[in-house]
Every structure is written in structure tokens, then in C-alpha cells.
Amino acid sequence: MSFGQIAWLPLCAGITGVGLVLSFLLMRRRGAAAGLRAMAWSLLPVAAYLTGALPTLWQIGTAIVGFVTGLALNPVVWAGVGVAGLSVLLFLISGFLRGRRLKAAASGASSGRSASAAQATSGTSAAAATAGRERAGLPGATAPTQPLPKRTPRDQAAPAQAPAARPGTPRAAGKPAADDDFSDIEDILKRRGIG
Image: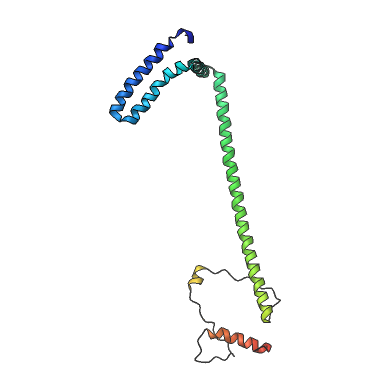
């Protein structure tokens, strides 16, 4: 059947009439919004006939039907569909493998960055300690210092204890334990002739 053999005006008018009746029933049952939407769909066949869009829609429809029937009955087309599916599968697998490789490289780089940052931080603190010793004129000012050991949360939670008194260091009985640090510093300064 070709496009010219169909009576398009009665067909479009009939589809629109049936659609308007159903949209009226739908409006009473489900409300105005559903009824107006159905009415809008019902007016499209008459609008397509009046604007002359029916020949174009006919060609689009016959092209789609021809493609589907050719696809269903042609083994060469099915082979092409299989090759296209294999191509999509290979794209997905390669993307997955590439993502894993990039993730592994990123995690290796971040661990390397954290290690170098820790070394840089310890180097900076060692340089600051050396500079502080040079200013105070303390022994070992030019000797390289070892980085301090990392403190664990248990060490940080433990209360600070006063260092034990060294033998040969005079300590008054009434002084609190925190004064031990200052007395050590005073002794060093006196030996250097500063205090």
C-alpha cells in the first residue's frame, strides 16, 4: 500500500475524534491535567494532515520498518551487530583496565609524596633545631641531628613527666619538677660563661 492510496483526511479526523472522547472521559476520571494532556495528543493527527507533514512521517515510518525487517531476516546484518557488540565489550574492558592502572599509579604517587613530605618536614625541624643551638651557643650546634621519633596517640595522651635529676646536679627540696629543665639550662649557660 502506498501513501497515495490511503484516505488521510477521514483517518486523521477519526483518530482525533476518538482521542477527544477518550480525553473527556479521562478528564472526568483523573482530573484536568491528565485530560488536557490526552487532548493535546489527540489533536496531533489532524495537525500533521493540515501542515502537510504526513508524507515525511510516512517515509520515516517505512524506512524504520524496512530496517527492522532487513535486520531480522539478514544474517550479514546480525554478524555486523555481533561485531559491534564485541567492539563495545572491548572498549569497556580496556577502560576498566586503564582505570585500574591509573588508580595504582595514583596511589603509588601519593604514598611517595607522603614519604617525601615526611622527610622534608623532619629535615626542616632538624635545621631549625641546629639554628636554635647555634644562636644559644650550645654544644653540637654544627653536628647533624636525627629526626625525632614519631609520637603515637598513646604517647600524646600520657601526661608529661619531669626528667629525673642527674647525679651531681644540685636540686633544692622545695622546687617543683618543672624547674629541673630551667636548672639544666642555667648550668649550661654558667659553664659557657654567659649567665
